[in-house]
Image 1 (cartoon, one colour):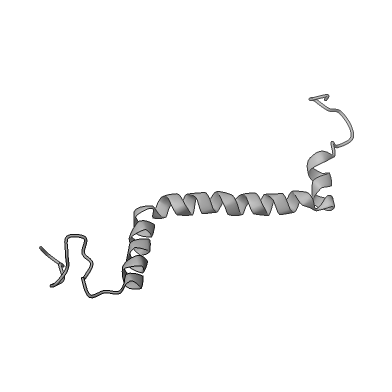
Image 2 (cartoon, rainbow, N blue to C red):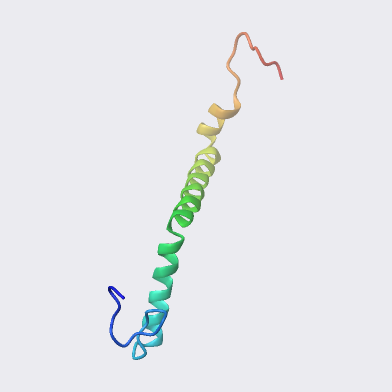
Length: 76
């Protein structure tokens, strides 16, 4: 096989690698496999935290809650 190291098993890990090295390699392979999903969820978590922080401040909350004076199309 192209790119296969000598002394590796079917999974591509070497027998003489330490447990920590195999663990780190498996974490990186999982990240490469699910990179888009991880970044997609991370984007929404960061956006939620920023929006929650902005709405918690009274000066920004007033902008979102207060209705402007004058004619209102949606009276509620």
